[in-house]
Image (cartoon, rainbow, N blue to C red; front, side, top):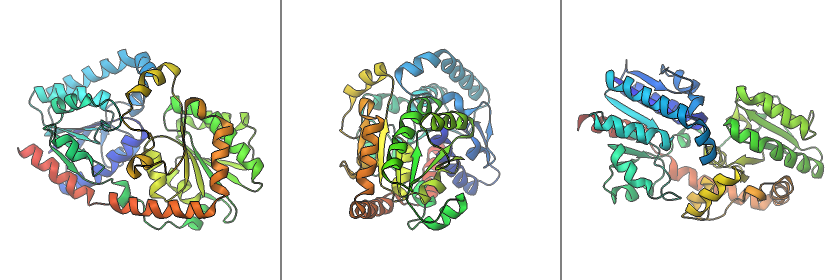
Length: 376
C-alpha cells in the first residue's frame, strides 16, 4: 500500500503530519511520498523536493514563480503516472494541487483533497475545478460538506485535527517555564506568518506595533516563533523596530508561544485558528501586494478573513488589512484587549465552544473516507 501526498508551507505540513499518523495506524507498513515538510517526514514520509517551493501566495507573487511551479507540477504528474499510488492526497494548496489532481484523475488515479478550498469565502467558481479534480474532499469545518454535496462532490466533515492535538485547558505557567520566560507579567506573541513573503511584509510593522504596546505597558514581554530559515529576517526586523532583551525569538515552538501568551498579534491564516484553540485573544492583520489586493478583495463573499471570525460568523476579534495593518492601529487594537480583562475572558469562553465544535475523531473519519474512495 502506497499513498502520495503534496503539502506546501508550514500549515499544510502540520495537517499532513497529523493525517499521516492516522494513515500509518490504519495501514501499518504504508509507504508515503511526494512533497512535505519536517512534520510529515517525522511520520516516515519521503519528500522528493523541499516543500517551501510551494509556499507562495498572492497573484503577483505566484506569477513571479509560475514557470517553476508549472514545471514542478508537470514533473510530479509524470512521476506519479509512471509509478501510481493507491491514492493521491492533495493537502490544501488548491491552486497547485487541484490541477495536479485533475490530471491524475484523468489517468485513473484516485484523488482526495484534504481541506476544502474556501469557496464559501471567495472564488466560488473554483467549485467546478474541485468537481473535476477530487474523488473525495475531507472538510475541516462542519458547514462545508453540504456546500460541496449540492454541487455533486463527495465530501466528509472530519473535524480539525488540531482540535484533538491542542488541549481544552492549557497550562500557561508550564509553557512559559518551558520557554524560559518569566511566569509573571504580560506576554504578547507576535506571529508574522510562515512564508518568506509574509515575514518580509509583516515582521517589521508587527514588531514596531509590539514596541508601541511595550512602551504603553512597561514590563510586557514579546515572544516570536520563527521558522528556522526565516529567523534571521525576524531578528533583523526586531532590531529595526528597536526591540532588545524584552523580545524573545524562538525557532518553531509556535504552540508553546501561543500557550504561554496573554494576547497575540497574528497574520491571517491557519495560525489564527491555532490561537483560537489555545483560547487566546488576538489581533489579526494581513498585507499583500497592492495589485494582489485589488484583484482579490472584490471577490470576497463574506466580510471576514480570519478563521475565528469566519467560524463565529462575527467580528469577535479585530481584523486589520492592508493600510490598516500599520503599527499604530495594530498597537491600539492590542492595547484595547489588554485594558479589557473581562472581554479577554469572554472570548476565551467563546473559543472553548468553538474548540468542541471542531473536535472529532479526525483520524478515523479521514481514513474511513480514504478507504471507501480507493475501494470504489
